[in-house]
Image (cartoon, helix red, strand yellow):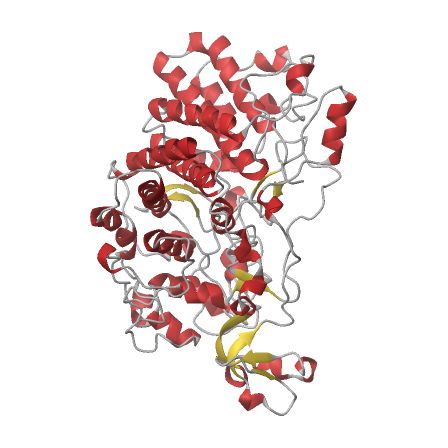
Length: 610
């Protein structure tokens, strides 16, 4: 187990020291460094180990929050903060790029900055496998490690394309004197993703089914391929780019997901809460890959702390998200027959909604949340018993040690069913069957409940039936009912995780981020302020504390009317983000990067729309 943990604590090895410069200005590896490696699989594995903390970051480490749930992925329509909401980018940056493998990420695009260090890293591995290591290892080992290198190259290009669209594609190590290649302009995203498709195909044909505990294998790779192919396939479709490519990628998403599903290695036999708040995920039946945290190895995180009931995240679940949760009879709240399904009091929501609501949110109003609904999906039930007390290291500061699920079965089956549904609806695929729904959405809904949830009256959600899909009055008219329900399932399943902003981008639905479209974005649950949030009834909050009644009437605290403040919580001074246009689906490159090309006599095209 110690070796497993060390995989994620590695930060750099001597071998990588010369791989940290920008792709446009990078010297070759020195003969001294090369001479120390590529002798056997152990050397190759050491090189490949450094991919793990970057691509499988989990909860990251200490207070670093790149690519983390809760603290990293806070930019979406699910969450609302006080005052003005965070804005999309509106101007071309002076510079955008990195000269380090510890590359910054772009939070409002949920992906990497303009940097090709990790592409080069994979190309170096491929080059050394072909020209040095191949004679030192077996054919099976050569194919496996080539598959690993091509998987990670595809991983990086998938993320780069999701952020920038067209990007220059490099499939070999570029020398510093090859200026035409170093300064090549962007390749079309479809051309790039066809190369990624080929890399992923090779990877799934050649990566080992088992290469050790918590190490990349065929099933883990297939799960990520289902993610990236779903993204690109639906992006190509909904943005009307290339129907043939959309079909090709979505079919591959289905194929990749089925590799995992047909293995029968994973199942939904443990409760939802256990996925995110367990000290150890070893043996968890739903988890394909997780990151281990261990205080003894100083590998800890802060994500649990920010859901401990006290720490302030700054953006929290709004009423639009709350209303998207199904009642436990499988119907939307407007049509549900569950008692109190029309109530938006937190205590009633816990009992009447899909069990993932109770597992994701504290069951009472907390003023540490801007909306009063406090997320604790990533903290244990024990963690919130310390509110008002001193927290143990496990749930305070940056010393958390709960393991992080990096890839789990629920994402695989939801990627699978959405890809199948889009293919069926738009691209000539076979119709989705009830059996398909039972293997995916309904399998998730049959997760067992833990004792604490049962004690609160939580119940499993009724299965989704193709012949009786929920009749949602809020459904977008351009989205078929089945696809709408698949999207809802993703939203309930992945609250605070990596998916929501990327989903909106691929569905071409960033208009949801315009909060002027729905006043519920500025509201939280139904509360009795005097009973549940009396801290907002001081003189400081006169004229600021407000609730909204069902008929739209707003009641403002005036110092004398505390008893009247019963209604939907209005987030303090919440205002819409700045106006934005469709250009924000993709990020611009920096002015300095374009100038750098010009100074060498080459052209770097700016991102479309910028």
